[in-house]
Image (cartoon, rainbow, N blue to C red; front, side, top):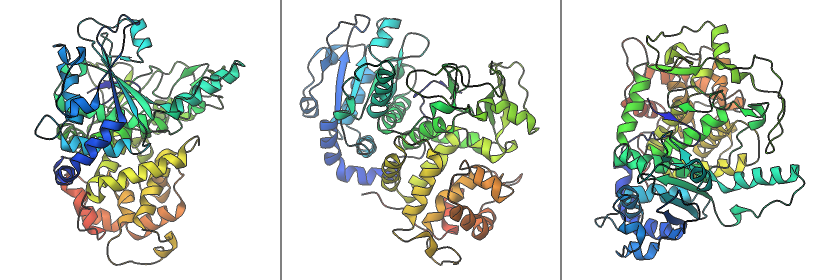
Amino acid sequence: MRRTTMFRIAAPLFTAALLLAAAAASAQTDRDYLKNKLSFRYVGSPNNISSAVEVLDNAAVASGTESGTFWASPAVSGLQGMVRKLLKAPGQGGDANLQYVVAKTVKIQDRPVMILMVNDVTAPLSADAMNHWDACDDGAGHAWPCASNASTTDDQRQQCAESRHETPPARLDATWAGQMTLGQAAFNGGTAGSATGTFVHELVHTQDRSDRRAHMFTISRHSYHYGSDGTHYDIEAVPNLASTYQEGIANAVMMTVDANEAQRLFNWFANNDVMMVEKNVPVPPGTGAGAAPCWTVVTTPSADIWLYNQLTAAHVREVQRTPNPYPNYAYFRIRDLPPRFIVHNENIIALVFSEYARHLGLQKFMDALKTNDRTIFRVSTSPIAQLYNTLCRAGLEGRPISAVTGVNEAGPKPYLIPLAYADYFTAYRSQSKADYKSIFEDMLPQEWIDLYWDGYKDTVRSAVPIDATHTPQFTNLTDISIALGVNQSTAEH
């Protein structure tokens, strides 16, 4: 189990094999793009907050020249390796598949990304250093990778300035898509692959402008989007589905570069393992919003702040753990949970979307993320429902949905793949159309709900059953695709 906090987690899926050939063909183009879009800055003594920031010369690094204090330091080999993977040619330290995935990600906003690298292993970072360098403390004074989007940060700063009757600061998004801070310790704490996956996850956060719906998950200035403790675990159901979306899409893209995490997380689902839910929210249900922080206007809090109370009221069976390493959490088997609760976990969302990318192409998924980002920027809605709608409509290839309703269409039906995978990764727990619609916060257009439930649900469930004698397998997702007439994965280009 991995403990994570806001914008921190690594959980990639599916191997790089499907992408590698295309990546090799376009590696030079991807590498040239990244040389212009990634701005690497190094701080060797971060506890001295007046330290000069060393800006790396990307062109020099790409051509083989490694000079300066960053390259001279023996303490930051993992950070050095990451820069090489992103800027150097394959065979000379570069990673063609990583460059391909990172370039596709940065093109969502198509603006530069600032990547601040700090030496957090020579000495633990002080609280002042963490704050000054926008780092996230892993609890031991190390800068665990974390990131932010410039536009959403700008909006928060502007709202705070206006609430104080001050002049808003200059906007960062005039230049930057976002920024990331990471330290060497992330590379020392695990395999290089896991650190690479974490980097990709955080990079997605620099591109994501979705609304966090803070007004629904704040009570008296305290945010409950991850629960009362302000942190989340990768197998946790968190209250705020907007947070689940943000972590889920980041995990889905990360899953293209870390096969080990891919297998671990699929096994978690396949083995009907446990999902964690925080128990002790210190305010009772029905509590009013109270005072609001400067960056949001708080309304009536969402009932999902009290997920555990809802599960108790629904008589969902708890799994007892003795001893319980996390006594403030309860545990539930995935397939014991109603579908609307299953989707509060980020990796359920990630499994759906990563499998979509594997079968229909990473480019299609990234195009959908870019389209979705424009749709949900500064809009408080269900980002998950909007992304499903975007993916389904992309599968229509310009046709209206009316062209496929009331018709038993022959041939490929890629517009149904997201809906079928949503059903599968909620373990077919939907017993009614209302259950199924709840997966999408009841916000997916009814036409899609009716089309899948009335026309194709039985086809999918018959092709790939999940029961006591049918344990989920990776091949199931291909079988579902074939059952819907999609017989060939989309080639990357």
